[in-house]
Image (tube, rainbow, N blue to C red; front, side, top):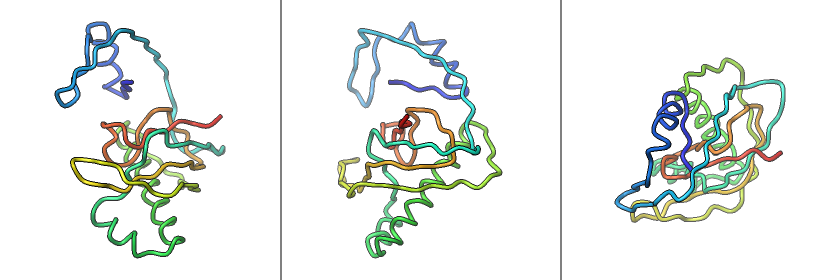
Length: 157
């Protein structure tokens, strides 16, 4: 799946029919079928709560905060991850030109962390759900390495 936001959306539409394959790090994936969905989407904090799940592992921690994370209590870990997720949402807002003035709230319900291979190293990733007062589009990525599919979210209806 290719998701285009802002200028990227118009590029996807412009080049959609000409795409015959995707080349990802030297691997070619030929496109036998193509489907396109265009949607205008308002993002941001509003008066409702939304529940999302990570459909692909969320890479929240870098090397520095990983070292600190493993030494924290479980309550401190959860608070740290909630803060990181809020920062990930703020980063998404910046990418799409949205400035949020209201407070972002998050409640995480994560499964046990798991290790994933990333650039020949093991990195800690997370799966699970979260509830927030932020309306987000399906299939965006939050966290690190979103262009490689990490941190993809989908709203639970």
